[in-house]
Amino acid sequence: MRSGNKRYYWLLSFLASCWIGQSWAQPGNLPVTPTNSLTLPKALELARTNYPGLRGKLATIRATEADVQALNMSLLPQAGIQAQTLNATSNQVRGAYVSNGGLLLPVSGVRTDGFNMNPAWTSAASMVVDWEAVTFGRRQARRDQARLAVEQAQADYEGELFTHQVRVCDAYLLALNAQKSVALQRTNLLRAQQLQRIIRASTEGGLRPGIDSAVANTEVARAQLQVLESQQLAQQQVLRLTELIGQPNPAVRLDTMVFYNQLPQLPLSPGSNPALHPQLRVYQKSIEVGRAGETLLKASALPSVSLLGSVQGRGSGISEQAQSDGTFRIDPSLGAGLPLRSFNYIAGVTAIWRPTDLWRTKYALSAQRERINASQQAYDQQALGLQAAGQNAALQLQLAQARAQQAPLQLDAAQQAYIQAQARYESGLDNIQALTQTSALLNRAEVDQALVTSSVWRALLLRAATIGDLDSFFQQLPR
Image (cartoon, rainbow, N blue to C red; front, side, top):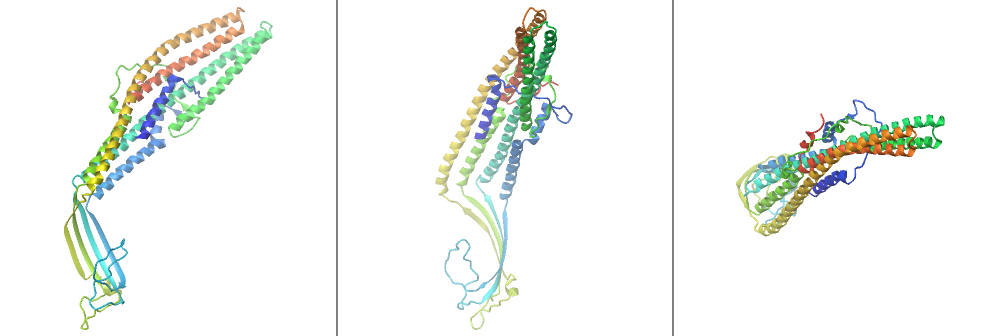
């Protein structure tokens, strides 16, 4: 859950950057073709299917589902079959011994006629069926824990998907900012070039001083540099967006600029239930998995009752009855020792209980409860952060809309100032410095107009991210 906590704080800090200072990334002169135009829904779908982080989360879900199937199979009766054929001496003595890891095996029955080093073939086959029939809750606890592990993996995927969708949406809006900025800088360059042609004609005719032409040339060069810078930054922003969808390509062209044609409506409802936030569900499932582990630990100290059944057969090249001289006949051939000649069966119930597990489980339960407590505290911290972030997002959305209402007034005033400065300059009532200053003000006002419009959309996205409901953002997307 630490990774989920880091992911959440990265998300908030990333989106909060739109209030601390908007970073402008402007798309360059990218080719527009049907094969590389990108809409926001298409970007989200590509990110869902291609991004390695999301595909890794899906693989984790499939792994936990396979673990559930393996657990279900392990709870069924277990059957084992063993067969062996050995060629060994027939000596054996009475008395106890310890089989050291299976290295010391009895090779025959106890002889009554003394030791004999002659070898003989022996064979054995057995089938054992064992089933832990009564577990005092362990079986169900294992199933619950495995089921919750699947739900936790699913919640982790949904949380990562939600966070990544927010990343993609924000990157798409920034890429739109970049695309709009390039258009604005080109418009500014066009104004500077038009003014340059007028001033050049006037200076060549002796109507204007030569310094005016030099200033005009400087403004054109500055405007060209702004276009080049915006194109460079645009390719970086588009590359970042396409990296998030799993297909890095700086030549991708965004599909539409209709985000700048309308503003979203200010939501009236406070939002969805914070307890249903995808990030909180990850922490909630962690708590539930911890509690399931606690239940399993309690049940592990209880007895277990198993049903046991076995069928065995043995064969040997040593005769069963002694000869007249008291010795046993030994036939060294494989055909004599391979066939099974004696059979036994076993059926019964076994019960195992280790009282010492009560002491061991006591400390394990104490550790598990502390882990659950840690998960609960992480959940509470996440919920507190979401509550504060939601209030901040609502405030920022109101401020962004207020700024968006003022930006057109600034743009209109800047346009009027530029028209008047141009008229005064052409009539000889003002100098070139006043005209270039109003041109810079107009360019700044155009940029601010686009910036505040984008800020409203990003503020709406921030609100949707904090309440855990991106539908409130998608429903207002331009059609």
